[in-house]
Length: 211
Image (tube, rainbow, N blue to C red; front, side, top):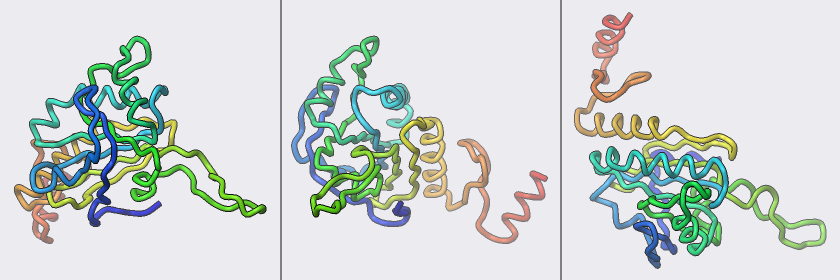
């Protein structure tokens, strides 16, 4: 698994569904550079079990992300038509109707490959035939991308393990606090807590007050 923190986020152009049902061709994260932070997350498949809980949880917190000037973008290996169908299926029927943030179609699996979250890989068998070893879906990867297009945080969960949207909000707050104040964020830092001056005196003062 590649560590992409500190590197430029791999860019792409792909089909997507936005605003709950509009098809967009050549959707790109490039539109956010210089304007917004981005939470770009992968999930395995539409019409599954853990995935709608995460996607609906992000939608529930959209106002809080928007207040922080953060765009939310989801991605899976499903087609744009599958995304559209899921977005237009009621929640009580297993759908995610009401979700407005973009869902990207990575039907070719190249985006998942470039972010190194594909749960397997193509290889040749003994007969020289190409086959896929593993599951041809994305792990639950999440990447926080700053306004310069650099990845500042990543977390990757195995397929059965849902992520914490509250933790995604917390890490956004931590990055923006650092960007605004130049102070680093200690363990379990939350918005409203004090930061630390990145000096020996700063950490001594912080630890002295805490312990």
